[in-house]
Length: 270
Image 1 (cartoon, rainbow, N blue to C red):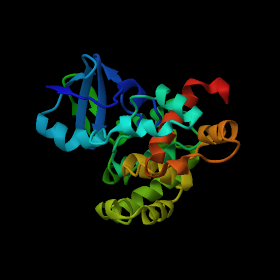
Image 2: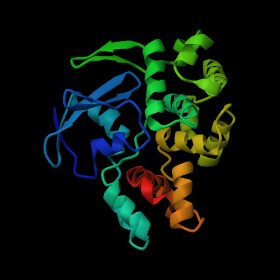
Image 3: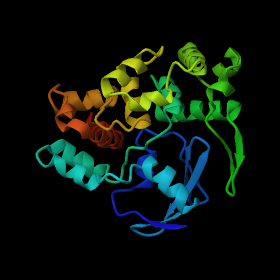
């Protein structure tokens, strides 16, 4: 099916902005997974894309997933007085905040601590291959992200093979809590930011940065701006140690993504 996307949208930048770790290029298409839904999408021209799903699924699943009801062009205009962020938004033009599955984000960002992006991708893919459901598409064989039920009997040996390291007990604890419906329930979508942040930090292995990542990429709370080592370098080298992101209010997380992507492309500046 052919669709038109008029707002900022760049598949490569979305997939390489540190928020999604399972979106490879397959036969010329970029693949995305949301729970048990799989999308293949390919850009045909400036605003035209070929997608592998029905119009109904695009509107109900993937339109919200790509946050396409929000204008990122308008958000970028907020940087007029911020020289660095102006450069960062130009560099990151096309990035969007994905609305991903909160359970997947909990496990993924617990795993992400002190790991490079390639290492995160490897660990997440290993978890999916060992424990996730197998789906055969017209392009490939895909493993979905494992549910808590699929992870409940995972042994330490196999989890260790997935590169969990010191994060292994954190993942096991999250699985146990999810099985008892004490974390990431549907009710959590309704929490205000403060309550959600507090509840996420009650999960073992989830500190401020990871909680903010889960809120931003799992709950679409785009006012949250996680501070990792790269963002800390930006704050120190470009803003004399003063965090600029709170000044962007309810779109701070979008600005954080532009800045983070810029830092990955210009590491020599930091």
